[in-house]
Image (cartoon, rainbow, N blue to C red; front, side, top):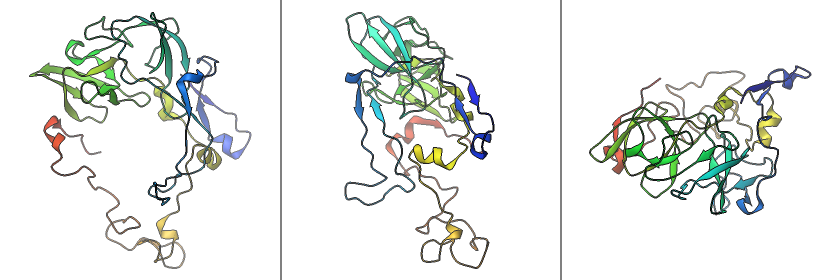
Length: 277
């Protein structure tokens, strides 16, 4: 989808852009395939804030997307191409020949009336889902299972795609969007193609109000706080942090820290780590 640029009728509009949704189906989501989304405001079950800068936002209806796509060897037809408020890529409503309908993640180039199929070994076309061992090497794939039968868990955001490099020894070598090369079971399923809405990354928010409607609350600089509130706080006027390295509000390193658990069981499946920028 192309990006729509607004005319600069106000300071906020001057920097604002949105994805042009004119190519999507103008239809309300199916009632049986949606549920009301309850907001947490960044709080846990004890009511304490565990994730900062979350809260507010517009009410959203969560679409029940089928990440398994386990209607094997039953042909389906794309009926609608729809917007999903809780994810960056679009979704398609697929009607199967047995009368069932489900939401799937949309791929780049999805069109109404297109035929799709899921199965261990089907025609390797865009939108079709099959096991990694039967997908042609070099293909772009998304919505990939980490373990067979668990459903798609990785490579699901707008415009993302992994590359199937080779299959050997019961595992597929997959190059992730980050550049990491990882082993995944050859019996795991993946969808051929690239996740839709690749222009999502070029969108400019433009105004603080738009971020609030997305559920993102303001982020206050640590150096603007008092020393009791943040390690960067204190001093008169605009001052540097006064530290060798920036810290979080709890005194931990804020930059360049590896967040992956050391000795994690799945380290053996990572052939090559992503490169530092």
